[in-house]
Image (cartoon, rainbow, N blue to C red; front, side, top):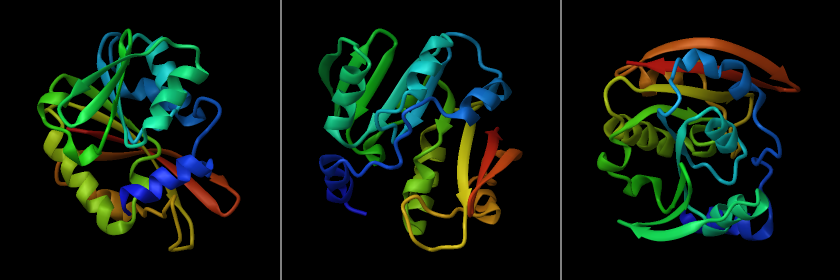
Length: 203
């Protein structure tokens, strides 16, 4: 998937992956992360998710990365937040207090950018990528994250190769992350022909 694919989706408003409300699994399972107020949380491929506001309200310093500039601006505009913009290496920073969205390519991130991250929340990143890119994404995430970090991951299972979002099996989750993390199943829920699965990954 090229960058143009996602830019076109945002420009045409074809963003069915966006949830207008805070994700119910985040609310139900976040306490399993056992993070303290002030701990930094990374949200990859964050779009304009309200989940970031929920995390901020819990006292976390939130860092998101999003490819599309309109998504970043919409997040602040739709939530009535004053944004301060600046340049970072290969990214444009959009900041409001302790919430910072980096506009640019996830794969351009450096270890330094995530050096103080304590937790990761991935509801829409892994499932947004085709199989070959999921491996690249997981490897990059493992490379970037400091020791001791925890990840709350939401995946989808369904009988179709089509996407995004894509089907991600139990075996694939273990294959992608098992070499670095202890992979713990937290729960699942069936929605029509799809099953959503919630995972906790920890060193």
